[in-house]
Image (tube, rainbow, N blue to C red; front, side, top):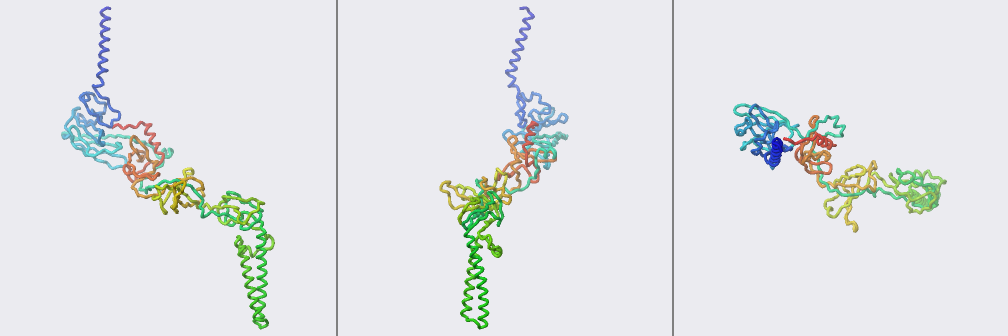
Length: 505
């Protein structure tokens, strides 16, 4: 091997050794910058020798410079509530923090400017109160050192989306205003819609006969007095004949009595004859009223009886006794029926019952008069009501009790057989601020509401309180009167995620 090759080989070996040493010890000579940027880094001796990133101080904070003087602004939250820490320096070298007079003001959207007080620590100025999330605000910093004042302003933004009203409407985002509300504490029970049994009527003919017409069908809506069916009945013919005969006898008895009375008054006939005619008239009146009551009991009106003629003596029209819906039909044309045969069942659906099942552990929490909200998920329907009945017995098989709510049903949306959930109100509380559950989103480790300021939505961390399944109390984080995204707020969360919003302080 010649001398030149030897030198080249030795150079390559030396370079390899140097690279190996750098790889082996490089990790212990410096620490990488943390992307999160929200926690202050502990500066080592090696850190102080490392040149900071542009605009960054040695503690990972924002470096504000004015000539040779500078302050590094950090928000420290490692193991403590978030706080400002300010590090003053001249020509990159720390100066005693007690030699610096500092004023820092933050301006949040929708809030008054907030001045932050500081206390002097060993190597920094520390804010005297926690800096609440979100750390999204404009900052004004004024520092006085050796008689000279220095001023800076900057913004740090997180959790914000700019969206005008037209875009918000297109995204289906409804804007609401935070207001007081009543939050209900409820007990949720399961139930079923039933017919109001007080408004269900079983129609019977009350006479035997043969059905000649049965035009009303199952499911038909009927009004009181509508003809449901027609019955031919010999028994009816006998009753009508009895009534007509009683009318004739009454008319004859009244004529005979009037004549006998006149003759008795003129002393032509004996008093005994007069009294006999009066007795006969009374008996004829009783017989006529008896025959009349039998027909009235079958549904005939007095007007109809006065118009009654001899034809159609056996025809009986079966009429609806109430307004409602035919829920059962048990007859057909040509069928012979008895007097007590069930022909139709009619239910008035203007009101229905919501029957609920109560387990023994909940019996003491359900009482007559309590307010409830009945919900049918299948229909998207809701209605408020009051418990009208709580059963006194527990079923032998089910080991549960029953309670009942009577619901108005003018549009007949509540159909018997429909399963429902029933929220029994235990108590109602007035809260200062409540929002619908649709307004709540999760962002990082927070529950947030997106507050609206002009064309800007900003995620505001909130502390939640009581909920009734629809609305939730906001204990902290959203002031009354603040506008916010009430629906489709997940769109805003998704946009923040797509924008890669950071939390870099």
